[in-house]
Amino acid sequence: MKTLHNKALLRIGDEHATTRHEVIRETALIIKNEHVRTRNILQEILLILQHVLAPLTILVILTLRLCVSSQQIYNVLLEMRSARLLDTRWTFFQAPYVFKDALGRVYPIPSEFDFDLIRTIIKGRFWQKPGYRQVLLADYELLTTRDTRQVISANTYLWPDATISMAIVLNTPSTGTDCCPISGCRSTRCENRQEGGKLCLQCLV
Figure: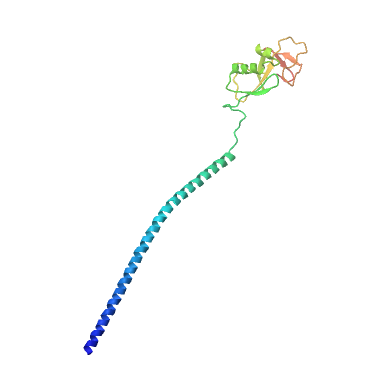
């Protein structure tokens, strides 16, 4: 009787052990399946993030480039604003001559021009103006303003930015009524010069 009881206990113990083992095995299988499922979900999320992050990365790069370009444009505008304004008074390679003709007009003549070109400009400026006949006959003199006793000729070297004055030569004899041809002077106090022409005693032209 005791032996039967022991066998029953052993059988019950084996059944409990088997049941416990089955529970553990099934639980482990469930955990494994959940782990696999979780890993698959994470892989899918990673793929989605990669597809999303790639355009975002490109967008960030383009935004940075746009910011850099905008900053460069802004810097250029600042440089242009602070840069010294160009002198647009003339477009010559060097400062022109300042020419004052016998009518009192002042205008520039390029310092690259020679004596013949200067005379051509004078002829054009006096077209249909008082003194045009004297200009055609070359009855005038060109003088340096700093020293009106220095008559300019084809052999005279002038520095750029030199000031040239023009005086029309009167060949008629002096009757006391002759006057200086320089506009604004018109003095009648003139005397003949040894080298030809006349000298105004008032403005020394």
